[in-house]
Amino acid sequence: FLRKYLNTGGGIEVKPLVTVSIPFKNPGKDLLLAVKSVFAQTFENWELILINDGSDDGSEQLVKKIQDPRVRIIDDGKNLGLPARLNQIIAESAGELLARMDADDAMHPRRLEKQVEIFQHNPSIDVVDTCAYIIDKEDKVVGKKRCEHADANNFYRALKWGIVLHASVMAKKDWYVKNPYRLDYPRAEDRELFVRTIQDTKFYHIAEPLLFYRFEGNVRLNSYLQSYSSERKVLMEYGPKLIGRTRTALLYSRSLAKSSILYMLSILGLENIINKNKYEPLSEAERHHAQSLL
Image (cartoon, rainbow, N blue to C red; front, side):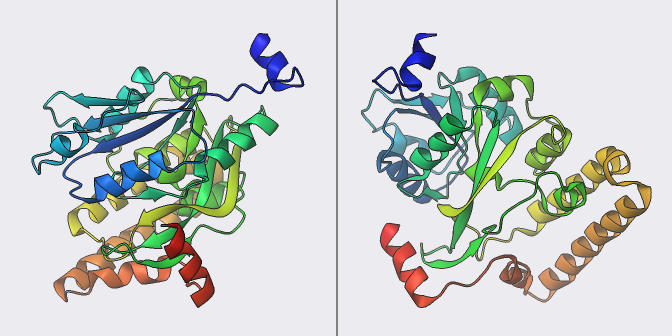
């Protein structure tokens, strides 16, 4: 009651605690940029959970040098996989809100601030994601992704493209507790989760790039093929009910075609072409602005 009173005119605004989570496995130097971007946030009421999922590149030693009470490091020497680690973060988190982040990405300085504002002004919202800048292996900004206004109620679009940009998601902890990740959808655990909950969840998309998403030049054949396989599994489980068997079959065929094309491109050494059409170009002014922020 006191928190609600203070947040709705009592005079002193209570900021919710946000848990930022970064699970990592062999991220190299990119992990330092990710962590620095958390410390650079304009919103300061956060805790950071870093979970080492079996790294052997020394990255865990880098983060263990951090001396800040807001940072917790979990290093159990095991490799459990991303879905299991995401569920572990839900259990370990102290925040009212949980912010996702990958170990090779970076946050816009105002990401947490702007996402928290959405929750404070719209109490019924469960999940907020954002648009993202695309960066390459050299930290150069090359484009932007998912900057159109998304419609989470378009089930066909949700099954075809996904509902959210997972790395940019902030969600209520209570929602996550009720909706854990499933472990049997490797590399599509996010798509399965958000498609599974689409009819009972209120989504909000910020059509502004608040994440630097490392995407360009980052195609790993086996990982992509596994993603497509799990994507088809999502289609088979949820597609017929949401969009009917015929449209599900069309999307299933499309996914098979993507797998075949990627495999052929990899034989020719051209697999990185597959990402070229997955983001929008930037004007020179936009690119310069984004690079200065990074």
